[in-house]
Picture 1 (cartoon, rainbow, N blue to C red):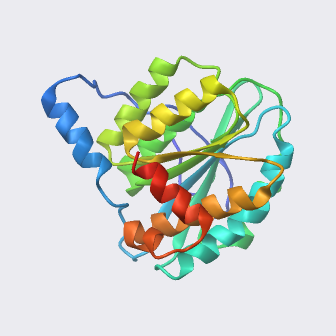
Picture 2 (cartoon, rainbow, N blue to C red):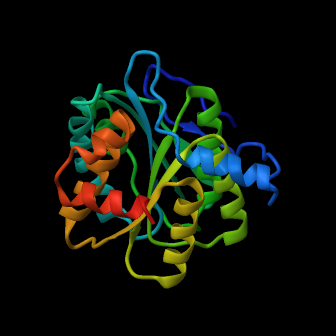
Length: 244
């Protein structure tokens, strides 16, 4: 089920992208290293592009509600660097993984997000990564953020999917809620493969996530220069994490 553009703002279901073999050869490693150093691509109209992916399973409703509010700050953060087109990608339930079209204003995206409520189910991070690969080929996506607190899939398969994203020049910004050591290990690995960043946030301190997401939005719109021009804690944490 491929994603589609939809001017009415309906959500589109996604499937994983077809895989491209990744080997351990020196050539592939060199290519991955080059991909990780690439700045985010910008559409022809000069605006940045960002996929905002979230785990919408189980008890995640408080974080989802917080994200509904924060996304307005993300658009505001990107405005000084040419603006941002952003889509929401989420999974919930037993087999639901959907993506919105790219939109360019907080009111539209907030309206889409507020139609969605969290629902129990297993993680579907692999499907999220597959969708991001398709977006990289279709629309030039180069940056994506994921917010979650669990991993119930094979870490090796997820790392291979992240390798596909690295080959396409997509950086993953993995934001972990909570302190699960296994989740941290997987999230760190996915960010590292793509040259992105892993950061932990405390759900009881919403300002942490707000600053991190605003920093990612600035990066997606204006690249490394936009990120380093910021002086807030979120930008400093992101810069430090990308340097690891």
